[in-house]
Image (tube, rainbow over all chains, first blue to last red; front, side):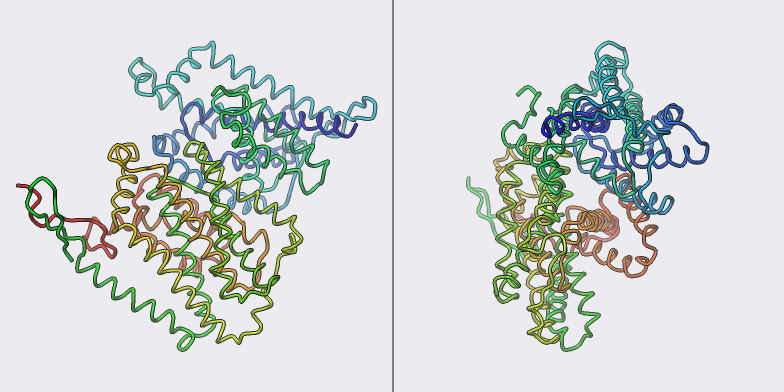
Length: 285
Length: 342
């Protein structure tokens, strides 16, 4: 029974990881860059969320309505101000620029919010749960999973069926050819990053509600997002979603084997996927 | 220094110059500085020696990162896996197995070399930026394994108590000699490598890997060898750094601050050049001394500077110097003096 419980909790944890991983898969798919400050931006948004909810007494759902537009705006500015200058075939400039940004963000957050761990008050929803047999299923983790599924489906539909999605896919396939057909890649990139960081707004609120956040937590979240994307298979939105489930289940099962083994189990599954199925579990070779 | 090259096909002999006056002056100064480093226990205090050892380790780690990122196109943010594993191996050899600690330093390099092989085999499948984060995962894996490994005292870390058998003066002599050897291997070795025929291949690969491959450079093999060499060099710096510290914990050994330091030094100084690493190391060393007390604010400035260099001045300080004067300290260019056709 504890293994079934581990599996279910892992799927629910995967819902949170999917919200980190979606934005990363989107940005890499479109621009071939990885934003090293991805996790730090999520923590920044969560801390802004903590301050907003404490100062104005916002409930979690109002907070989402406020924070997601802030997140999207941050993403848009990030792309226009920094990332558009470093998108190139050479991976070095984008890695270095976002690595520098990550260091600066982590330490700036430590100055503003101190190194303490904090969480967003949820008004009781964070403790509510359903009991099925001997297994407890939290209401909040189920909401997180539903939101993650909806976001994944929404992005997938956006990419498939809208004009913006076509422009994104065209820029990803061949940026120069896309520009010839009237797509403005700089603008498309800016909206893609706005979308990616906007999703982090959801992740930030849920992370803050489910557990705690501290300024130094960003790199771990970056690594989880990255592992989910690789496990699932690069370049696929649903792959990132399913990779997040695999990662969540690996960590939850590992944690039940030995509390010191949880995070490590996730890393080992990631390395095993790299060794035996480098295109990812759901990727095509 | 010029050398003659026989060109097949009946063309006249080409004379190629590959050394400059500035290079010779720099080499004499370099040898002088190395001699001064080895003589430090007789003229400098303990505090100065500790600082200089730290500086030497920064230079070595940054130079190895430069070799990978600047020439191999292998951007890693997880080199702490190798410095940490080498340092831990040295502690285990010296403290648990009774090997002489100064002998343990070269012996422990087997650990990063062995770790580098499967790491590269797994990660080379990942695209540029994903390779970088992959190295970070490997460093995290090694950190977590160490934290759970009771043989090296798990998360509590180890102290190098065997060093108490030596006096402070003897320890200083051992560590400064090791530092001099480390600089010879990492900086001198890179210089030698770049001046050898592999240097041409590396420079070609730095400028454009695809066209280098089309000219007969075995890019994937060269990258693998660079990665292993980089791991061993970084490991040597880690072993010496923690020998001077006398204490190691998983968090200090595998912390991301190592990657931060290496990236900052190379980017500020100038990527793809040895001079850049030396300049960057001095800048970082003095910035750390003067502004380190500002803690988080100082690190914010460091991060923003790295970002700005990546955006606006990719060549760092050395490329700015190069625009003013052409006086390389480590000349690796080959200049045709005469011959070689019309």
